[in-house]
Image (cartoon, rainbow, N blue to C red; front, side):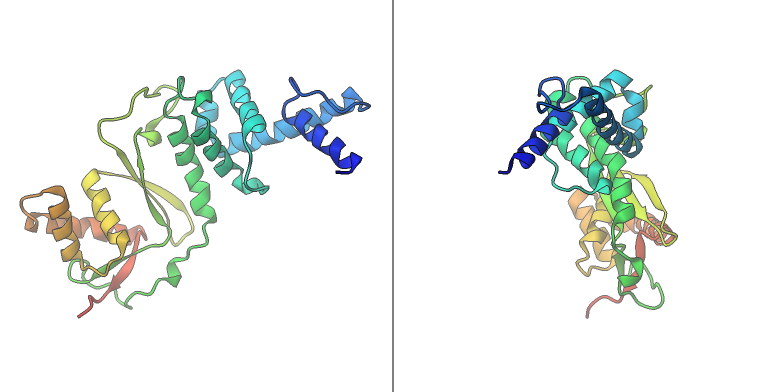
Length: 255
């Protein structure tokens, strides 16, 4: 390795961890301080914009300490700024020792905050999905899911976490959230009951089942004694998802 590359590598190591890694010999500390502050403050600001709830939960010292650990310990898989949030989520998943004792929900909360940008940047398009010209009966026909509607499950109620509410143990029931991008290119969230989440999961499996067959499957999976009683509420729920662009239409069932 050429001597200049060695200097670059030594400088990068110092900028990531200036408290324990010495700067290359011969570089003026006044100039180094500019780079130390500029690079770290850029990362801190970008992450604060990606994770505003987490930033509000942590004190300035706690936030800077967490970001510094990320800056030092994490090996990123991408140099792209808009993917920095996904790298931070991965860091939290890989290194729970930096946050789990104080904020056991932090990894899930970070994923919840990041997912909005991830869906906003996703290249899926509603118009690319093949459906019948007229949205037919949602029970007799096959409901077709949107490619930009994602079903999420968390142990903690991440959509409710704020400075005044920081749960220290998982909820008895999982938190089911639907995140979707509508035709106006706006990202929206909806909290779902477990039965509704299971119905949506069956729709998203896109196995060519009619709405009626999906309800029968739902009743069997959940142990519900009367599948017929689920048809009316299921129809209403499916229709509400059509109106939200979570379901983009229907197809005729295969003969």
